[in-house]
Image (cartoon, rainbow, N blue to C red; front, top):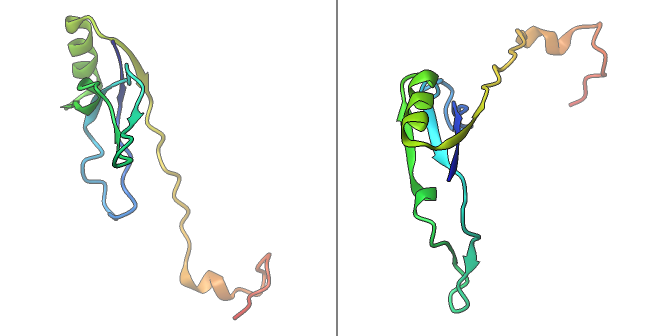
Length: 101
């Protein structure tokens, strides 16, 4: 039984950073997924794959995994690099690419 500990990225459907400051412990897949021959649904008998545990800090998630004897790996979060751009930059004379309509 192994798990990964990570901090989720923000979704494309939100502009803020809600729910991105918590750490998540998510179990890895132990059994392969199977396709139901009648309906074509994908399923699995692995119930731990449905469990996601939320923690306030990375250390809390790591200590939980150590207490329970779960092998884990930590995926470090990547901070987004934001570029300050102005609307008027679209119409600069010194643009590298020509402006088209």
